[in-house]
Length: 418
Image (cartoon, rainbow, N blue to C red; front, side):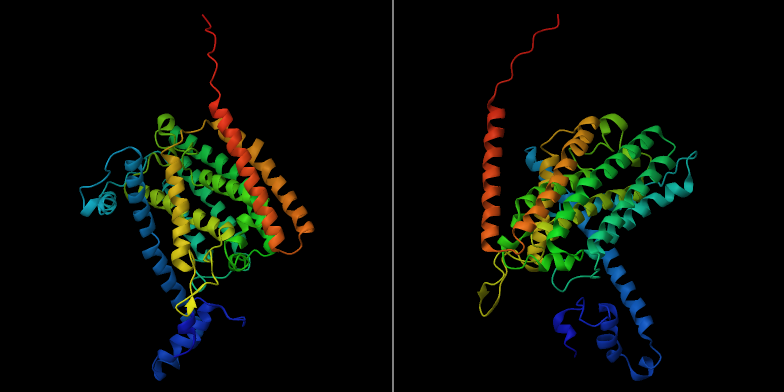
């Protein structure tokens, strides 16, 4: 059997062939009978392989929202000192599956005065774009669907189309509440894409590549080589990226497009049954996707804390490989859930002020600082890493002292207007 089986099906060699063509030539065609192989073209094999990968994604990736929805309900219950879902299945593990079956058999309502075509098309646009992002995310060294040389650019481009589906859903519902929710979402996503993209630019400047695999490879060598600690500016860029990504996926405290106390349920108010479930699945898939992108860009991707540590004669990565990637990603997802059940919702003006008056100027400052840092330290050395970690530590201590003093100040009672 060819060596590709030991290397993984998703490896690209130095030849111009992509992994699908390599798999068809080296694995699939030798397994076919001679009579069938004579009439079996490589192009047909590539189409079958890509259809198979698409089928795997459609079958496996929607399971992520099932797990994340149950996890969030359990996390919310823990924060509120209750048990959460416990009736369906052992410890309530089948509750989300039961809810999905219920949505599957609910009435599919379409507003009679709305735009039927756009109403039917909107959830599929959001669902498709949300899952297309996963094609460029490297889950492991050999677990990569397509190694785009512009992978991060592809992710930014395909995720931007989601806002079109949101506007289509709000407009076609023929409801002022849905339209208001969609316009809020469009303004929020378009605004926060700017600091998010500028934060990614700091990583691109250091790595000098748009390839997701190259970005992870640049962080090999342990936790000190992760880009979040490489410079003080990428440290702040990580937090701007993460907070902006929370706003991108409409999570609390940035869930203004829904704001059920104001506009019922946002742009998907008029949706029911499985069409509503598609929006719900896409939201949690986006949570996992943006967390995976943050891990890839700043937290080493599949690289571990001590990748060179040898145990039992082989390489051993702490928080490395596919398990480590998933653990780091789920840690960021848990942080999103933690923030949702801790912080109150912002007002619209606070949301926009945070983006345009704070995040965007800081993001530009990070780009300038990253460029100056690159001039001072053309190559990464232990000295540059030590200076970076020292500056980050001093900044965190100063922030802790500042916040502690502000919280320690007692608010003065305001005089009565009577």
